[in-house]
Length: 166
Image: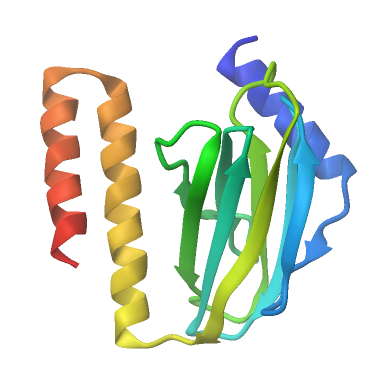
C-alpha cells in the first residue's frame, strides 16, 4: 500500500469515527491494528498547554495535534518502534476544540495496544513553551533524517542540536 493509500484509509477512518473527549483525568488503553486511527478532542483556552503521552504496546503509532481550523500543529513519531512512549505537546494559540489523532504507522501492522494519558493541561508556562519548541525541533530532525540525503541528514543534526538546547 502506498503512502497516499494509507493516508486515505486513515482519513476515512477518522471521518467515520466520533472523537472521544480528552481531559486531565484521562488514562485510557485502546487496541488498534494497521490502517486504524483514533481521534480525541479537548477544549482549550488561548495560551493553554496540553501534554499527552501515548505509550505504544505492540504497535507503532504516530500522534498528531490539529487546531480548531483543521491545521496540523504537531506530529510525534518517536523512533522506538512499536514499544514505548511518544510525547505530544502544544500551546493553544486560540480558544477552541483541538483534536489529537493516534494512527497506526503502517496499514498492515498486527494488532497491538496503546495507552493515552494527559500529563498536563494548564495555562502555559515559559518552560511549557520551551518543551513544545524542543519537541518540534526533534520532530523536524526526524523528518529531515528520513529524507536520507547528505544535506537532509546535516539539517536533521542541526534540528537535534536545537532541540537539545532547550
